[in-house]
Each structure stands twice: as structure tokens, then as C-alpha cells.
Image (cartoon, rainbow, N blue to C red):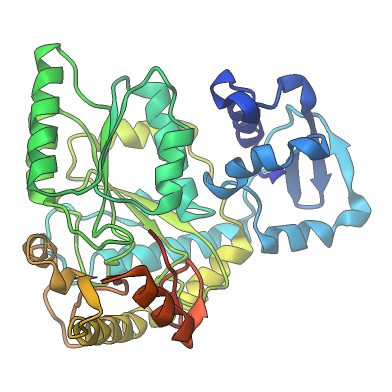
Length: 412
């Protein structure tokens, strides 16, 4: 496996060699770690025996910190000057021309985040935007930073994207409790209140609370106003992933200490590049704390060629978002009339959580009217009906979302 930073390859070895992995454990002595210089790049590489390869694939899939295709292509173009270097060699400084691309991408992101805001006071600036090679990398890096600096349990509120769930299950130490409240409903909120009160009686609090707005794939929107009140009461960071709704439609900044977005999805919109962002909220009481931590520990692993594609693709983000909103809402309405479908999971069709979504919708502007996002799920009366529908569905079958074509994926 190839990485752009030595901490990634060290984390791979620590994870793979953990006794908690039982039959999937790969002993440290099975790894050979080497580093190479290829022109403007330095790469850290972990070699394992062939029979251990599948045991470490989870690290490639879920943390999302490996090199991208474009970075691999650039590295290969310098194969004639390949040189092995010391494993403890430093990461090269980012070239000025790459910094220009990153700066433009940060400005694009913050321009979207700050358009038609629900609150105009103390909004983030481009310096509060941190770029990552994937959306999962932004979650993984922040989670690892929290594990090193903040004791206490981690809470995930609501159903999450499958890789996010795997990340918290597989990369959370066994001695640090992990609570998953998957329904994000009133009952889960009551459970959370009891849990927090019990910890407080012991002089403790949670490390952080993570939630998606709305959740992927069941589109339930959490009550982030209630979560914000609990975060203020018990002193923990509230981290909101707004990928499914997208910052075109909603403004979660009044509630979140940190906002996570997968730029791979609708921000890019053309399914040909990956990226992620983390935005600190200057209004958060934890802003200085996280700003200091990131100043020390943050590494921009997004390759400049990928950043350039993200910048180009996102130029029509709002116009594509309007199409996503319109088509998804229309399809949800159509499917809701079918006798073969028992439930439509879409923010418009979930009366218990719809008010939470609408409370964070941006006001309409001359160039854009916010909507309910790009994702829906449906539940059928039987497996037979589901199978017949899916087999007859003449569209691409894939787990991705936010691209320029309609996709479908079965799950149970």
C-alpha cells in the first residue's frame, strides 16, 4: 500500500497488528516499510506477503488516506528518477503552484458555505477549511486526533454511510466506549440525554458526537438544535456531515462545531475525483482548541491534480444541485404512490424528521431555491417485489451518489 505521509503507514501497521483483529491480525514482523522519492513526490510503502493482502484491505477502503489515481500517474511519470530514501525522511513542502489551486478550492467551498446563510455572524473563512484526499479521510483524521487528545466515549447519532460505520467499529480502541444510536429519533435522543447525565454524574463527558444531515441511506434528519443544546450543556464537540443534504441546500454552521463534507459526491458531481473537507466554526467555543490541534497535526493529503479537478467540476454545483433536488423529490413522490412500496425514505416523506431538515434550509435566492437533496431509499412489500423492481431497473447499479447519472443499490 502506498501513502503520502509516514503517519499513515505507521497507523496501518498498528491497526493490522492489533490482537483485537484476531484471525485477521498481521504481525508487525510481516511488514516491510520503505520510502521512495519520485521527482516532486515522496511515498511511504507498506509491503506484506501475498496471503496477508486481503487482511489489510480495510485500511485502504475506510480511512481513505491512500494515494489517488492521479497522484499515482504523476509518480509513475517520474519512475526514471526513482530513489529509495530513509523511512524517517520529511514530507516535501507543497509547491507554490499547488498552493494556488488549494487556495482557489478553499475559496470555492467557503463561498458555497457562506451563501444565503441562516446566521451572518462570525462565519468561517477560507482559512477555516481543511482539505483531505477523501471524505472518509476527513473523518478518519479527525477521529484519530480526538482519540489522541480527548478521553471519553464516542457517540454516533443516526444511521451512517457504511464506511463511516466500519471506521468507528474497526478503528476505535476497545478500551474507549463507542455508542451508536442508529435511529436518530426521539427515543434515541432520550437515551442520549440519560447517557450524558450518567457520565456527568461521574465527572465525565463524551469525546464527540457525530451525525449525518440527513443520514445515508435512510434520510432521517437528526434534531441538531437539541444536539447543540446538549453539546453546550455537557461540553462536547458536535460534528455534522452535511454531504447528503449538501451545503447548497442547508446551513448547519449555526449548530456544528465542525462540519464534514465529502467533496466526492455532489460538490464534484462527475464521479471522476475524490476529496473531502473539514470546516471549523469560528463561533464555536472549541474553535481555538481545534485550530491549535490542526495547526500541529494537519497534513493536506489531497493531491493538487485532484484539487484542480474538484475546482473545475464544482463550477456548476448549484445548477446540478437544482436538478438533484427536483428529480429526487419527483421520484420520491412517484414511488410513494406504488402499492408495492411500504416506505419512502426521503426528507420530504419522513414527517417526524422533516421539520428538522426544513429548520436548516437556506433561504431561496435569485439563482437557487434549496431543496431536499439527492438521495432516497424505498422499502418493498416483499423480497420478490424488490428483486423484480431492481432487475428491471435500467440504470447503473453502484453505491456512489451525487454524480451526473442516476444510480441504484440494494441493501438490507
